Amino acid sequence: MNHFSYSYEDIKKLLPERDENSNKGSCGRVLIIGGSTCMAGAPYFSARAAYRTGCGLVEVFTHEDNRVILQTLIPEAVMSVWNEKIDFEKLENSIKKADAIAIGMGLSTSDNALEILKFTLQKRTCPIVIDADALNLLAQNKELFKEISKNAIITPHPLEMSRISGADTKEITANIPESAQNFANENDLICVLKDHRTAVAKPHSDDIYINQSGNSGMSTGGSGDVLDGIIAGLLAQGCEPYIAATLGVYIHGIAGDIASEILSQYSLMASDIIDALPEVFNSL
Image 1 (cartoon, rainbow, N blue to C red):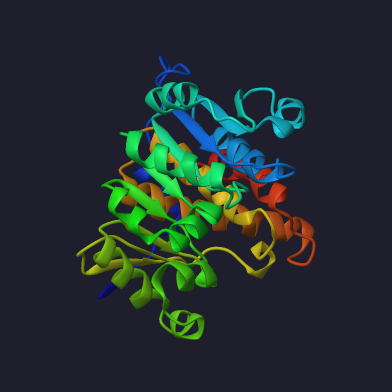
Image 2 (image 1 turned 120 degrees about the vertical axis):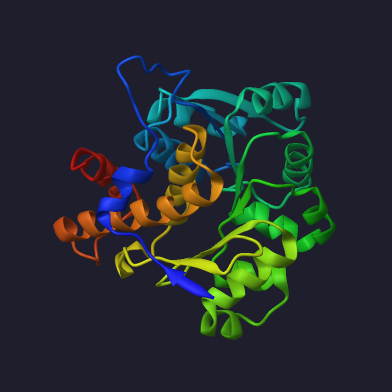
């Protein structure tokens, strides 16, 4: 297994190109599926991070209870909602329009959430980022891994990895790169196993990415939702999934490092990581 990392200069080479003829259509559309009752923050972090990473348009598919707060916090986003009855025709239309999907943030593990996950996995044709409650649902319904086709990225932390793999958490944390690579191989997907040094593995490869950016201040609620939005934003702009996953992890960590220099690692919040993204890209 060959470990590799990025330098700051690598961002310039790997970022999707922008030109004077760009428009919101050419910069990609992200669909964020998440946010059950009283969980508006998770999809908000992902949506705002996707925008700050450069995608042209973000749509959020969320519970009706979150509509007003999300339209207030991020009016730039298109809003679609569900309540007790899911409008699957509306969801399918949103899936068809998307260039990248991120699902799971604040979604819950309810029956409705499970139906939304199943439907999305069956209908999607674009790359997808799967995290949080979507992973918890997969842990409870492992047969759904058969529905996960190519261009899928999962972003578990060690406890979530334990749930979906059945391995002991201590064993996972002791062998982050190997755990990520084994799961990627077994399930034919890209695995972003989050830790102090996050590992990103693609199936049946000798190369594994070990991230060197970031700090302990990023161990805070919503940080993973921000990462999902960054990766989805890169995917929507045309990044190949493994590049989007590895580059997204690196950019996420750089933004966290910039924010911690100003605010300290003790005071860092997820929104601070998003606020630092413009400085990451502006410096390029």
